[in-house]
Length: 313
Image (cartoon, rainbow, N blue to C red):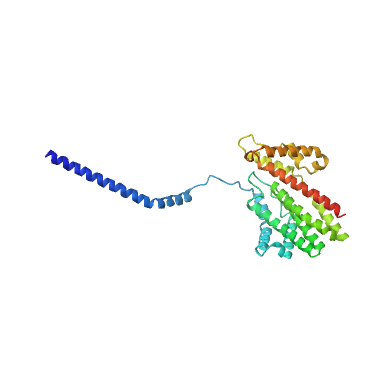
């Protein structure tokens, strides 16, 4: 009797084990089938319920107002670009460029200084504004080349001068815009230099007067560099980074420094170059390399402009 009872219990246990293993196998198989859907569901729920802890630095009201003022001018440039390159629509391009200058003169369009270390004319809505202005300048430059090829030096001069003046208005926002717009101006000055021999005396005087006005509106880069340096310093949580001294910044970017104290200027440039070559890219603040580029391009453009002013006498 005990033997029968023992066998009966063992059989029940084996059946139970078999049933349990079968259940576990079915459960694993079902989980394998539905797991991709569970993953997608968890991602969807997480996406809907996740609260991003990153909050971008918002522009203050006065900066938002300045940016909004560019909406219509930028839209006009984009409308031209949608129809083709600006240089194939000369009348619309000139009209839009004159509009930009008019709104600058009236104070509707104003400079857009950087507000923090990640705020730059290099990207975002500010870059959209800068690229729109540069598209106009580039289009006017190509129109100048086309006019010069057609033997119309006066038309070429007028278009190129318009572009140089517009680039000047967008130049002093930050270090990136200084470098970019200075390089654009230098390219435009080359076209104007080629047109100069074909200008009569009156056209030369007019071109010279406009270039002198541009030169007189040049600004020292020192405040822009100091602002960039302050933004960089505020963004750092630890020291040990390479930085230019305020004194070196002033000497490096001061327009007067080039003419009045060339040896000191060269010493500062040598220190900057040593920093650039000795430092790893990860250790070098971006504003230092941008300072070198902006200062180099701005001063090279100023020298070219001075030479051209002499040529137009």
